[in-house]
Image 1 (cartoon, rainbow, N blue to C red):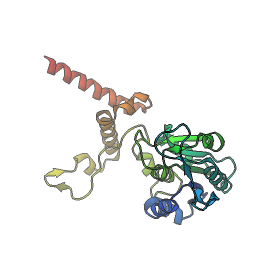
Image 2 (cartoon, rainbow, N blue to C red; image 1 turned 60 degrees about the vertical axis):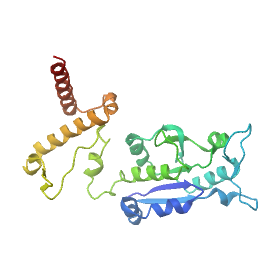
Image 3 (cartoon, one colour; image 1 turned 90 degrees about the vertical axis):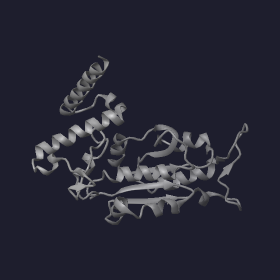
Length: 256
């Protein structure tokens, strides 16, 4: 099996390394399916204070990451990857990181992730050393390490051989443009709430249809924005149409 190589440019290498020791990602590294390295921009400084940030030109709050050490770190890390691997900066101004993007990245031989800090990064780093920007959400974090770990985790799950059951990633939320439906395990009855009868029937076709219907319904109620993309499979679309028709009929009854 091939190994995906990821390099992370970060001021806190131990933050990346420590988080990768556990769970699916940790097992992928142990089995040689994933390799993650880090590069610290401080290693590319030449002053006694190992300065990686400075005040912004034009004034303003906060500090900005300097171009020299950061760009040198990016270039050093990039040499350890196969040729042509993308240099990706985790940034609030990037394109949304989605399941589709994760699948795209999982098909690559490697990628470089840049975790910024402070108020931002000197624009010339983007111009000279970044191929793509990705955002994990419309909120502000202290740095790019947690978004980088999010990307690594999502991509790792999609690598062949990582999950014990390859169907797991195919049935995860967003894999088919839908949220996952509800899950149940033992005991059969818990505090008066029973497992749905269909899940005990042993009829795999009925169970599959029930799970699909619940996934469509949950997506409609909780994340209707996902359904606006118009990418549902025909069976899921039929279920959605039935739910919308039932909702419309209920609205009419309440309006009488």
